[in-house]
Amino acid sequence: MTQTDRDRLVTLRKAKEKRITQRQASEELEVSERQVRRVLAEMRTGGDGAVVHGLRGRPSNRRIGDEKRQGVIGILKQDVYRGFGPTLASEYLAEKHRIAVSKETVRKWMQDAGLWRARRQPVEQIHMWRRRRERWGELVQWDTSEHDWLEGRGEKLYLIKMIDDATSRLFARFVRHDSTLENMAVLEQYLRRYGRPLEFYTDKASIFLSTPKKNHAPRDEPLPPTQIGRALKELGIGWIAAHSPQAKGRVERSFQTAQDRLVKGLRVAGVKTLQQANAYLESDYLPEWEAKFTVVADCRDNAHRLLGKQHVLEASLCRVDSHVIASDYTIRHDGKLFQIAAEHIRPRMRGGTVRVESRRNGELAARFEGRYLKLTVCSPAPKTNAKPAKRPLPASKPKTVKSQWMAGFWKRPAPSLRQVIANATS
Image 1: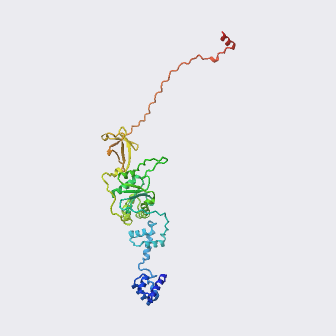
Image 2: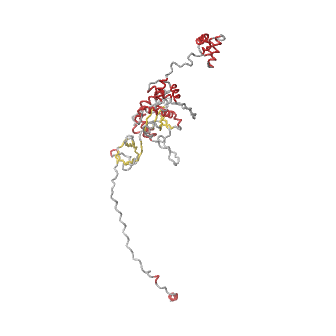
Image 3: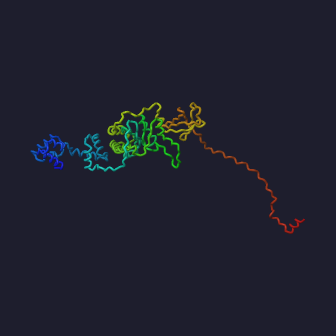
């Protein structure tokens, strides 16, 4: 008998001896009067042991049999379920094997079998939580994660994520490189599916923020935008830079979840290629995320805006350069010389600036004052193997005859001093 049972027995004895009423006993024990009368009746026949429940110490009728338990442990010992936690293991048992077991039961079985051990959570620095935005599409957090998503079964992949701040609705794609063009491709897929959000929230990576070059003096004028920054401005989408990872904690925490659930889901599905990974995202992971982790926004309005005719994604979501048109109506781009077609030449074009779009499909488009120009590559001048003729040497000047009046001067005998004096006085 436990101490709680002894305390209950004291109250029931008072009611039995009519020192307190049955209503007072029920209020003290926090049970109904009918329950008090039932226990008092049992005490008259069975003594004080009536306060102990009759099923105490006996196995539950709903206890899961040892055969089912061993079957579950055998499944979770397979290599594909390596590292699974109780919650995720319970979900996969129900979905893949049609075995309905609560996560707490799976937790106890895994602990007993040595498949899982609870870890003490470290105390982390506390950051103030920022309130969610009110509407879907008002703010979308955007980031990339570098991780061994395929666990060595295939090539190295990066995961680009865009998660809505108000609802936690997720859009993601695997790519081969965390480059400007790959991010533009994922951005185009998002815009075509949902429309233009009001703002994107990213870190200060070089693809989003231009950084001053080293050893350069600070300048008052702002730095030019990156290719993605220019594209967002052309599409009428705002951009906010986060000053710390905690500031965009929603997308950071989603990566922690993905590095557990998504990695194991890819392993169970046997994914080995980029195409299979993106197919798994679209068919399994994103719908699962939508069902389990999204919330309802405070305002049911959709803040996404539709793409208009003026929003040409192929022209904005690509590399854009500016070049000056030479006096012969040519421009130089990527080391090549391009000639503007004669029918597209207009006044004020020489010395003007032309916008050159290197589109992701390999096409090259040039636009001047809102109109596209036709370009042709200028073939380089043919190279000749003949050596250039040597320049003739200048004609040499005729040699002049040197005077001989000094010839043998120093060999002649010098006059004596007497002869010099005589010659001077004569």
